[in-house]
Length: 343
Image: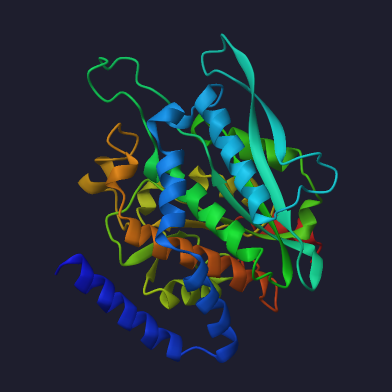
């Protein structure tokens, strides 16, 4: 089936789905479809994963350029700095893994005040860094780990949500953080967790987006889907754009505790990760995961577009949820949540 027939099938499916949801929900879906276009996601991805940024390694110029791009897009989207911060940047002290060098990198943080419940926040996170340049490869070959899937994909989703949610402001406030140093051991998210920009008990949910790649463009893989009290809202968002949810792929990998969401889960905040579609780590995943082949030109942009729409709607749905999300009873992070939220 050629690409035009595939897009026609998707359009028909989207119309069928739209007709099954309430009129109040149809309004935001129409706005998302009107606002989030191919060119938007293409521009973000092609810049963030470009050779010019040299793999966005913390401590190197390409990482700074990525942080500055994100901050500029936050500003253009109308996000405001968190009260008490002079701009969008949180300085994160880092050091090289061999211990020969100390440097600063930046988390990029902005917010959208809610329409009704301004002192409750839904946090959206994605890591902006990748692993830089492979200096062992000869100049004639590709030596840049561009990190298109990991995690220019997630940052693109974050920027799309930022632009959309300031046009369709949900009931609760939105806090958006592009964190740094995930590839160095979750350094940026751990620093943010330990140095909050607002009281953590006001943050009711973290929707993180990160991934190793995809091998199934019909699904979104959700780490922690059944654990965090927002399964209906996330599943609805994905189905609206013709995608199914798949909970906790590759359980042997322990993926829930390997991305930035765990920095906030440990505080007690329900924190799933919204990942591109895969069920297992197979050859298609390893073909690109932490490889110089993970270039932006290899991305399925039709899938990225639908993924970004689903991520945005999921954030909107949770921010409008009447009852606050909670960890499943007995979850290993439930005790921390009870302490954080005093329930």
